[in-house]
Length: 390
Image (cartoon, rainbow, N blue to C red; front, side, top):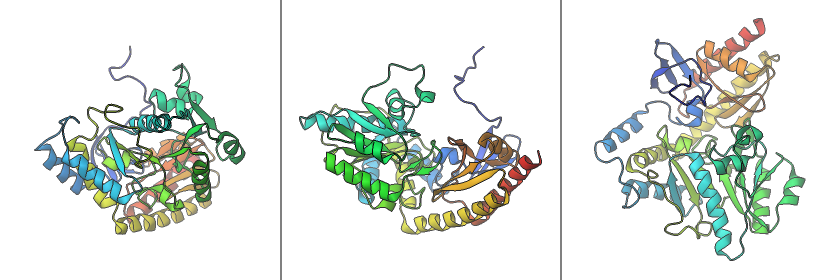
């Protein structure tokens, strides 16, 4: 008999009842050190006081009105995002996959309104842009698309890191290039800064729009507010979600005025998107995470964590191969199955997230302490030793 919750998840046998910073408390009282952060969502950890206060205060007043009316909290968050980024305008969604759908629509509508329609959007092997029909068509992997055809047409998936394939595919018939500056689900694979710069130049040459998916790598995760800032480039359209709500469901599409020029009244909408409750929390997150002093601390802690992880890899060469990633978006390339390491870590009361390419994702709260970083690596060491002994 099917479960009352649709069985689309392979869940760990854990039920958490409380969160405190970088810790999750199981129903039986065990305390787990959380290096998953709800898959890079809880950027400020669990139950951050500023977010609890903001959410509670807003909940007492107004939750939802729909976008039939002005929403001051939405306007304030949009203003903050525009002030700190390349963007001129913002549309709010409830998730990353909704942001992907709008990014696709926006890019195609831009070219249509110019009188020279373009439909093809180039994407890359290993990408993850969500699980809606448009988003799985964009990623193109058999794992996500098998059985769900016919797929939305207009996407061409290129091999990861194949410059010749990109050069051959990117011409003046291409509407946009969609790429994650750091692949998350794909195994913590950063795009080299020079490649992002080259991609920006190629899009400018051909008239294609550059869409960056910063759903997982954005909101301070890499030590900049957004990961593309390391390369010194600006996209035309950017997808944001996960960390922007600090745990509250919230997403956004940021765009230049030019890229968004086709999106006039009636071309897109959302019932819940940009509601007062979500945007109040998002603004509180934004004020904390965009602070240069906060981002400097993320970079310092990232350096500390990477140093300790390099030592871990050296100590367990039969379990780990390498450390990869940037900022506090790190991965351990494993020699044994990454799922085995995840289970062993769980037995050491440490939570990590498997990804593709046999990589273990480490996505701690950006507020994690030095002592918690040390404790996390100690628990990973225990897990690796357990695997070696077994």
